[in-house]
Image 1 (cartoon, rainbow, N blue to C red):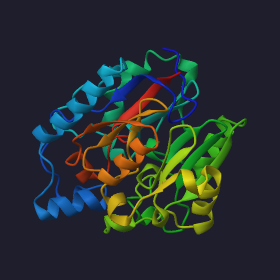
Image 2 (image 1 turned 90 degrees about the horizontal axis):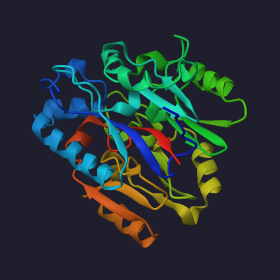
Image 3 (image 1 turned 90 degrees about the vertical axis):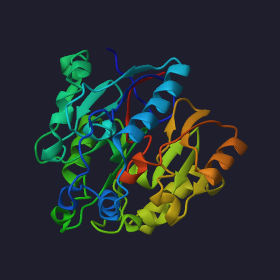
Image 4 (image 1 turned 180 degrees about the horizontal axis):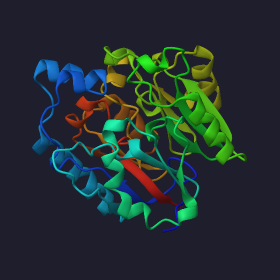
Length: 303
């Protein structure tokens, strides 16, 4: 397989889509990896497997409609395998396997059959001290945008997933690219004050547009840099509640086609007014785990 990912929005040809099959029981509060899952476990509203399977099948149908080759993880019994973006990501022709939370390492085994099709020289496993998840990494033509947290209390946040060592390793792997990192706001307990990954508060769409949530960024000048880079008129700013609902976590099939959650009324209207075709799907149950459409897809090949 010849991988090719230069940006977030070129025409998609092949993708790994996670699976909600045999997702396992509702986790215990102490086993939750993020504050939103924890909130829903405590409230008794954690999503049911049957509902999540239905939501993911709706995405699969949209991808098939656009003739995208869709790979799915091998199903591991009683195991959460929804968020395919966390465990690996592609930049150019390189597949980078994430150093993920130790409890989730089996997820990598479930997609091994896909990455065995990639030339061994293009399969990269970063050094152990590099922590990184795909939701924090966004190739954008000459740039690679990376969400990170470099505070001295990094280890106290289960929500801090990408560290400085990983940012430096990615810069070394792609010396011809401009790696731009962004400090994200982290909270273990309040999902409205937590940007789990960069794609929870920012995502480029189309050729020159972006969705952004200011409070997801710890450093205002870094948020301002993105605003200046894309141009204020090309940026859709989302509210704290819209970030909580994961409005920035849609998924691009091409520069003018996106998959979005059907309840994102304000965003979907703006997208259509700006010339996008919006394929609406139900994904509100999966959103309860602090991830949405970008999190559960891992692109392999774009034009």
